[in-house]
Amino acid sequence: MKELFIFDLDGTLLDTVKDLGKSANHILSTEGYPAHPIEKYYGFVGNGIAKLIERALPAEKATKEEVERILPKFREYYNIHKADETIPYDGIPEILERLQNKEAMIAVASNKYQLATEELIKHFFPQIAFTAILGQREGIPIKPHPAIVENILTIAQCTKEDVMYIGDSVVDMTTAKNAEVESVAVSWGFCKRYKLVECTPNHIADNAMQLNDILFS
Image (cartoon, rainbow, N blue to C red; front, side):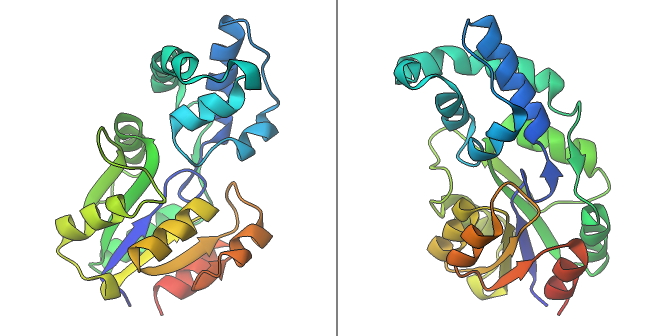
């Protein structure tokens, strides 16, 4: 069993797409842009909020300047509504509690901005003493750059060989490879399973029971 388990947030620990999509649609509508079906947002998430806004805007309007103008409005609205319909995936709270009971270190590495990452984790998993909760921060490159994993390794004082990284996307699997740590792809999130398979992760879990077996082996 590893010493440190690093989890992605959106699509891995929490099903956040409804609140992300509804928040984006609210801002788009107030700015006079067309909204999208919530299902469309599965293809928009994973690379941070700025990229989400860029993808949601009409192609001809998705300029850097327009994204930067809309981004604070999205954050203001999402900060209030980020937990309206967001829920943990089945079995995730139990897995985190079992890891904690085994005295393993647990961390979060997300491309969601830092404030929302911290607040969602503390709201849904108040019983877990995370070693680190890191989101998108000023001056730090987002995943798949390995900086966020390297930051967590420094905080945990842990070697790469003692780490397992768990995520639901191509971005996550690329992050794990870039950081040179063992990876688990979970197929219940925002990415098609075949795309995860193409990333050749070390493990694939299709449900919490399978993830449990992998983490505690």
